[in-house]
Length: 122
Image (tube, rainbow, N blue to C red):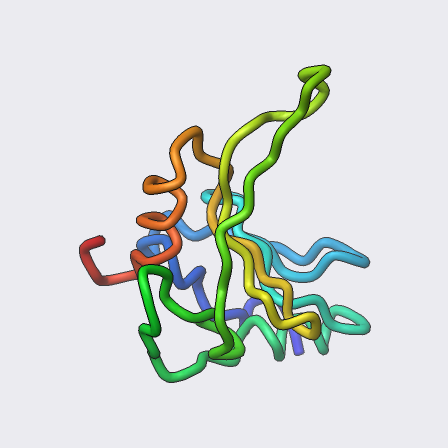
């Protein structure tokens, strides 16, 4: 399977989705920095990226668009300011671990970015 057969990012408009394979990480969107589920190799990563779950909304945060499992809000705190602080949403399924677009200074912005799917308004 070639990278040209990769579906666009579920969070970005198709003309803005710049999808690439990163070895030992998986497929990511260079536009919003979303990481999809990691596979054993490029072929497996692309297959997992291309899989889309039926939309389920359990609470404030929509489920993962890849595996359909719950997602959670996480905070990055860096007392020595060695990393960007803020919030991001990540799939809680240990076999998936897809990470949402970017890191946001406000929790509500991270949730809104995760909940906005391509072609929808958040």
